[in-house]
Length: 131
Ligand code: SF4
Image (cartoon, rainbow, N blue to C red; front, top):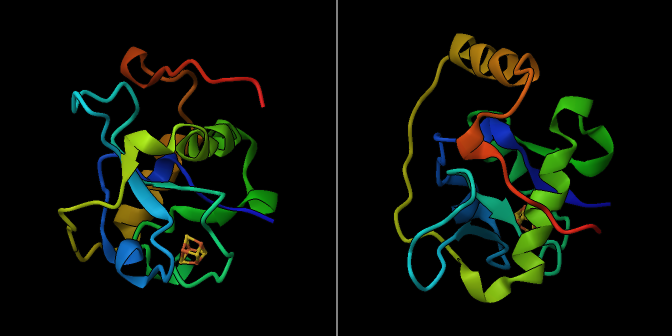
């Protein structure tokens, strides 16, 4: 069982989940040149995560899901999170942690936006290694 941060986090990157994680498994992609080719979101390193579930209720965007509960539209996010394990030297615990109150309407709009996204935009297209 794995816990995954989905694309519902993109451009939201609230830090409430980071504060809750007891093993610093929630990370951002911050390579040495500080130029990330990945979407602007947080990830869970599956090698560090102990599946305690503490982060799940903390995300105001309801962006954190168990792998088994992943909607088909978000299934690529599983491999995207796995990259944090495969290239761990490029990932770090976020320095800046935003906290924002959101309404249930905003959460639903964000979910619908990503569920209905037909194709990822070019700047979100990420070549992923085969698992
Ligand atoms: Fe951290 Fe627990 Fe969330 Fe895993 S499930 S990322 S260990 S808070």
